[in-house]
Image 1 (cartoon, rainbow over the protein chains, first blue to last red):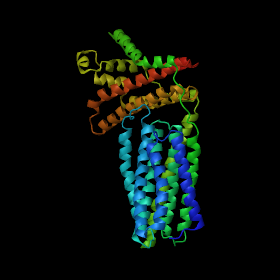
Image 2 (cartoon, chains in turn yellow, red):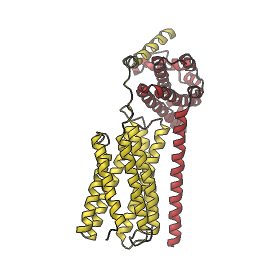
Image 3 (tube, chains in turn yellow, purple):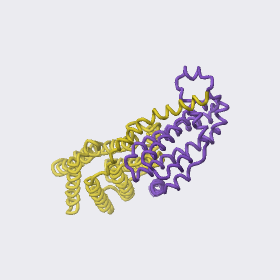
Image 4 (cartoon, each protein chain N blue to C red):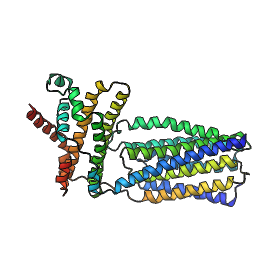
Length: 259
Length: 186
């Protein structure tokens, strides 16, 4: 497989963008907080390098196997990021909001079923069965990710749980990119996944360009300081810690009045 | 065959994408609208509920050990409880009001970010209240409402009572000028 000038440019830009984002995550000490997200970006750097080497030094089969196994890992990490975001959003006080986790898990099953259904309906024109399998797998993954981000947003709004600045930026970026990728994958499934197909290269370049926009957005958003809640004044803290006792005391007064 | 298959695929993807966009847009607008509301607007959303009833039911559930409840001969009779609360309709009012209480805490959070932990605790309380009401709705469907009502309804009212206390304590601590209005409403 020969790479054109634009292919090489996007490849290099993607690698540079991911390295820059990884640097921001480590330098701003966000890696421990967004462990799976940092792992995904590190994987992207690793994948770009590995696939480049395999493409030039290995066989077509080796490239397919490397691509497919790294894509599986990528999808698994994206699902872990959904969980990571859900933990931050739905456990604001350190405990899961009652039944939110259950609702979230229940919503997961129809989401997976819809994603599988859509990928089953797709019949991407391809020269080899592997190409069709990759296209279907990608479509399934992108559908699932899009659904999960939309569901998570709906669940957080309906539960009255806000999104903190950094976690919101990561989710917005990943959610928007997933929706965009879904459109790209739909196009590839329709027009064909062979490099010779007329729309394949155009769609691939659009997808990488959108990822670069997303990476730039993350770099800028995560470099900025997150709005920290002002520490609670001691007086208010004491008053709130005493609130539980105050409620119990009020109840005692009410009880004595009742008797 | 392939053409019709492609048509099904494109229709399904189109419908799927449209649903995702509609859901995203709806919840985005909902979140935006609630973050821009004024204090009077938020307070206006509260539906009146007899404060004495809330206090009395909360008092009854305060003796939360089984033994204490068994010994308490002043415990509320399920029929009386149903009447006092106003049945499921009354609980639904409290459920709606609990969301307003969160908005009231969030309103204060705009100028006092230290109110954040209270707003978050209220969200958890509201979810707990909603959970109790959902259990009762489930029980109503299976014909077990009469048995389940005293247990879940009392806990729902008690949770609501604690929420109102938290909101009042928060507004008192921040010396909010409209505090008397809030006391009156709650």
